[in-house]
Image (tube, rainbow over all chains, first blue to last red; front, side, top):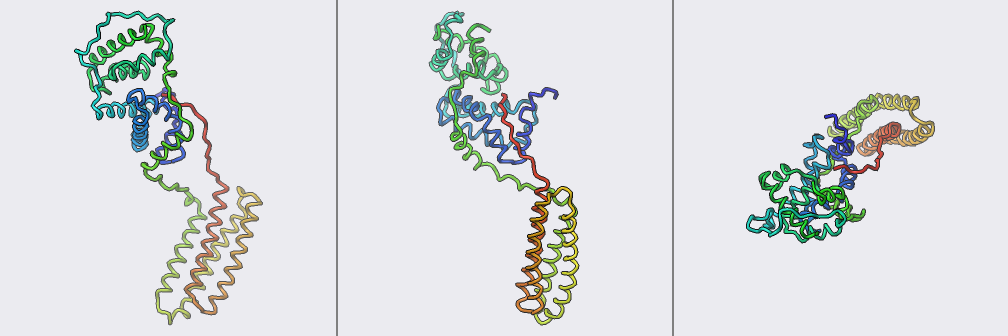
Length: 177
Length: 180
């Protein structure tokens, strides 16, 4: 375990493991805003995302002794937030994937010119996508998950993750161009 | 990766819309902290220092001895308790005084701290002498013995505080960025 980045905030994490409330707050304070944004991209509603983040931090601090620096603390925490956000969607019976029949009549490839790209335009376009497509776009492109990880989180196969992503991306490209 | 994918990946951080100020963070934290178990009481390993072992022994032994004598019959109290108490008290008074001498010679302590400490010890000694006089009169011995124990406790607390100040705990928070 030679990668120093894995040990980011090691002291804060270790002190938090010992129950040092001040250090726990410092650790929380460093990550809470990023985690709220991760959750809100999935659950969409701010109040729901706050609940998810709250529960995620409680779970993280209660299980901190299980964290062994095999990943960064941030990615470990983010996985908890994403899992809880996905569970939140499941509880609300929101479909995580778009069924095959719900197919858009779009060309196989959609050209998007670089000069037409702009963050706010992309955000607006993402919001117009069905929830399942929004989730997979967020997980793959913004959170940086690969299809194996997405498969695990959503409970789908790697191939389903790939096909869902490609459909989602094509639809997004169509909305932007 | 096509242009769209590259663009989004390159601008990932700009997709974070929600900002939280300190009050938002504190508000959410109050719900989280309420669900976490109380942190364990911080234990300072003072017992590695012989002075605290002796100090604790004094409190425990005095407490046990005095309690034992107080439980026994009141008739024998004035005769036996006063003799036994006197012996025990002399013994532990010597031990506490030895520790005070050690503190006086402690190289890690500032002169200012030592002077403050000795002033307070002098006050407690005065109180102690008065209690000893009261004890001789045999009026309400139970209360007086309790007061003597309390007097020893105060001295020990002073020693603890003084030595704790001479070994301050590190408590620095470095402002760090998060890494996902």
